[in-house]
Length: 330
Image (tube, rainbow, N blue to C red):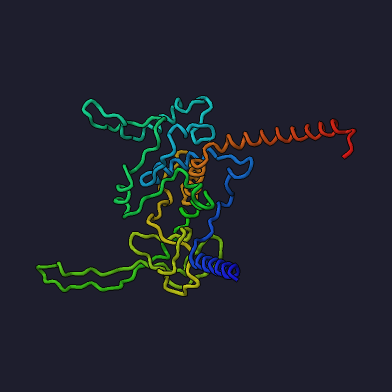
């Protein structure tokens, strides 16, 4: 009887957790129409896309997000964005040197006066962090610390598809509107405006105009977007507390502190590719996938060679077995 009660309680807990997950949660991330070139046993990273992705990171993402686990020399490793077979040692790659030198970092050793100076980075240095510490990051971002992007590809379910969907999934401007929830107060005197209270305005999202992913789900109601928060259907969370409508049919997703960053034409690609929102999201997502597994190309090449070797070895062992034990009954 006791075991039955424990089992019943466990099943009830699972049902409650499942219902809570169903009530909140996020829209399922989707990959680009052409898929990801690095997926599969023989998949490889698109080097041109990696180069564009690094440009997006450097010009947009690096102002808030660090990549502490990467060094500039990794950009010139085999399979990396700027790999050149003429320079097997990435520290000698002149292009990597030039990229590193564009960033100034704090010297680890003091000068003759005992002060720490800034110097151009070298390929051996790690990526420059935008903030000296987490407290400075919180102060600059309303209390939120932007996550490090070194292994964000592995830290998020669906990896590159999540990054791609999140960055390109912010609603269009047409769904936003403002409404006054409290009129301005003019209780002060002409000489004393300290009593004046400004009008309170809410930013609302018309859920009926949301087009999320490839689904045809329709939502009726309004989402209240608080100051400093931005709605994204692919951000894990729960929109029910801020939804004016049927709570059983609240839009998926949640709110995050990062406003939309990818605006068409914000980056001018050096190779002439049109910088649409989807293109920039695709490129930076692939770059972050490479950053999470910079040795993936070598690993796959070695894995194929090992599988071929093991296949041949298996065949040889089978024939050896049949010959050695050919006169022995089993």
